[in-house]
Structures are given as structure tokens and as C-alpha cells.
Length: 97
Image 1: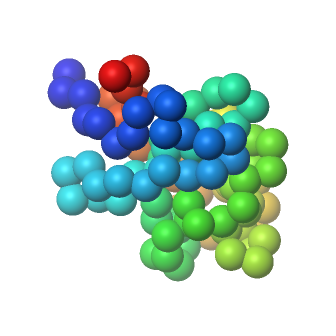
Image 2: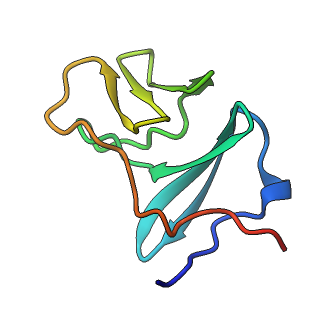
């Protein structure tokens, strides 16, 4: 399995996304409640970057709370969307350098 570097652990701030490219895709790494989550930085409904939204607990609010994604299972929690998953491969995680 190939690992991809997006951010160092010490670069991550609580409830703020660190965004970086991985194989031509925009990936967000979010630290929330002492856990690290990696997800695609693309709203499956609108195609806009979702990691600019607010993080509240383990929820990611995209835009003006139009869509709410759960970070734990990385699926849509609120709103109507044709594709519900925002997950990305598990090999995209921050590193300890």
C-alpha cells in the first residue's frame, strides 16, 4: 500500500481542515475530538470544496448548513444528495515527522 503525505500531525488544529492534493484529488484531513479523519474535499452533490465548512464535534457542515456530513462514518447526515459518501482510501493520513 502506498502512503500519501498531506500534513504532519503537529500541523493539524482542532476542528480545522488541512487540505492537500493526492493523486490529483483534493483531500482534507480534519482533527476532531482527538481523532483524525481523511475525506475527499468535494461535495458529492454540488462538487464544491466541503472542507471549508464548519466542524462541530464530529459533524462537517457544508455551506450554510445545507448538507451535514458525519466524520465518523463519512456519510450524509442531513440534506438531500445523490451520492452520500465523502470517504477516501484509508492510506491517506497525516504522518509523524
